[in-house]
Image: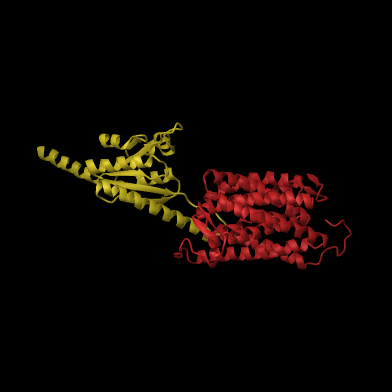
Length: 169
Length: 302
């Protein structure tokens, strides 16, 4: 009996080390807050960080070469951005984050990724501080798309300062 | 239902004209093109005089491009400085183009010149498009790692200017030449010229692709607006009724096209556009050599 609980606890401990915090990298100012929260949680309580960047597909143009170049350029830009953020995460957690690069609509790609990657255990989103609402992803995932979610969702208020983040993680 | 077009001095079927607007709008929504290069020949095919077809298409292209420009402007995808340079040069080019237009018309050779321009430009563009999609179909993915920004000899010409949003520091001469050429084509052919301007901006100027579409729309809107005004002042050939009918069809068509475009994409559709462009060029070319039904007609020179 005690053995069993001990092995269960060890299993949970292992799972805890394996857990992954997924941060969606968009162009909002709050993404830094979400990123820092995820990195601090991973550094303190175990686990790792994953970053998802969804690039916009190029619109239909009459020249195939132009369209291909648009895709290539967006991809290169996204890669560069992810490399920079990955270095930041690495400074806090000591490990490199997992990087996901997708093309399409942010919400759809996020849901698809969560369905594919069972390893992702927590989704971290930061809410916008503007008066227009928390942001499109949070609005979608707490509203109509909530029932498609099989991952706990952490919403970090976008206005938290670095010190506040230190105390809550 | 027939309606009389006062400037073209002929009656046309309203449904036919709205249908043309719808078809061109559909294609422009599908491919993200202005559609002027299909609009003008279609109007000529149904018997509208070349002068009216060209001037009216320019006006119609402007209307079709404005909403796109606004969308890109909001998202910050317009390099206003580059757009201003291209537009200034485009205005000069289109002013010259309209003068040429008037000159050729007074010589009575306007139909021939417009058709020749179309045969040459559409012939080249159509073959390049078709070749591109055939190549892409042959080997689905070819890896060409090209440096994103290369310096040409012409970037080093004098009068250097900094275009911050395009991350360029190049001579102002190449954009001026490109803008001028597009303005000229715009005045003579009644097109926006985006299908040439976009590749030129990428391959010749080395602009980042993110701002190319928005900036080209910027130039197209201002130049076609100027062409419309200049054409109506100097040749009185912008037919507002025709333009309104076309616009009504095009607005509806563009919505369908954009909705279809998100599902229907890829090389096949692009190949079809290339074929269509080639067919229009061919038809215009054949018309140049076909013996007219009436060899000599007496009518006012339009």
